[in-house]
Length: 71
Image 1 (cartoon, rainbow, N blue to C red):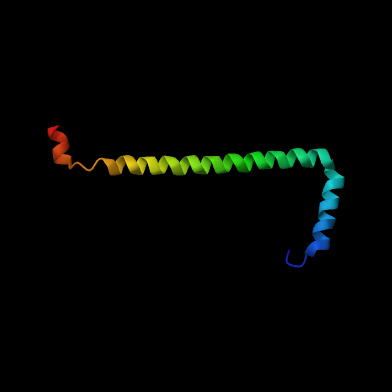
Image 2 (cartoon, helix red, strand yellow):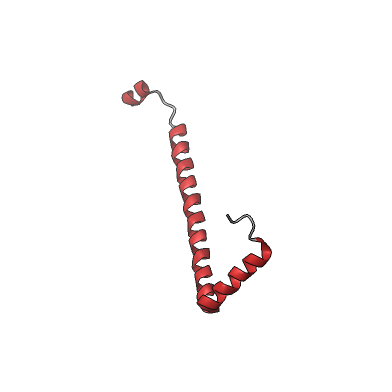
């Protein structure tokens, strides 16, 4: 469906959106989208870091269960 839009079609859509919403609203919307993307990336990085820390904590304790009970 969208295979045949091309550059003129994209420019026409951009002009129509600009006319309908105005420059101010589009600017603020793009700012919010940027903040959302930044927040998403930060969340992904924190989740990955947390998983790596959990895996490292499990890897540090290599004492057999029978030895843990004695201590």
